[in-house]
Length: 284
Image (cartoon, rainbow, N blue to C red):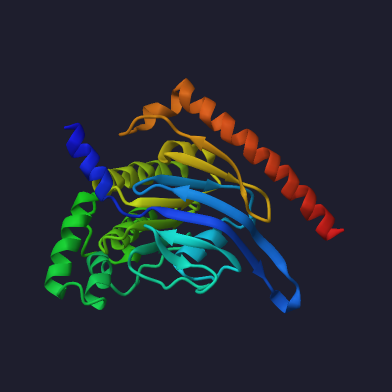
């Protein structure tokens, strides 16, 4: 059994290596240092939670991995292959890295089933029939088998967001990039989404790069929580979450969970104070 588990581990894809990355924006000729010499290693199949003050540069890193923004210095690798660096500042976008943003991106004129099946058909990876069959199967696994024929506006926000994550996963990506996907949800819907995401992760073991401001969310979902400094973004502290999977909400009342939240909160609070002070100076 141990040999089989080791083989499965070695077959996983999606290791991200962020090496001394710097990003300087230049709006209207004024250099803004968003990310400064940031380095981070994320293992294949890891759920890596990224927290830090608003505007610190977390999304800049996510966009660089996705290929939406260039980097100024440094390198980012995926499974040992260069995504972006000195010779190629902007990573090529690809189906191996799929992004789910804060605001929903489902096509409102397509059913949930057709939304999920859209990617593989457009990419030429599957016929429409094959894609719809796989989409139906994955929606059923995600507890959405009875709403596949509905349009996004006809279902709850939680169902729509769950379908959006299924749409990302049908492409079999190496990395799932999530930018505060549950931010606008009420506490009950968010708790359901947490469990749904963990169930999808248990089936796929896709690498997850997840940005959040919710420390309880970060501990509940993550293998590690990376606390970033206020701008410019650098790695301040990494909290290892040594809590076995699968996890459920009984974990929230455990002493181990509360201690991890407190540890992360202390680091985040320090940076929040710095960010607030910096904002006051900028306004003065």
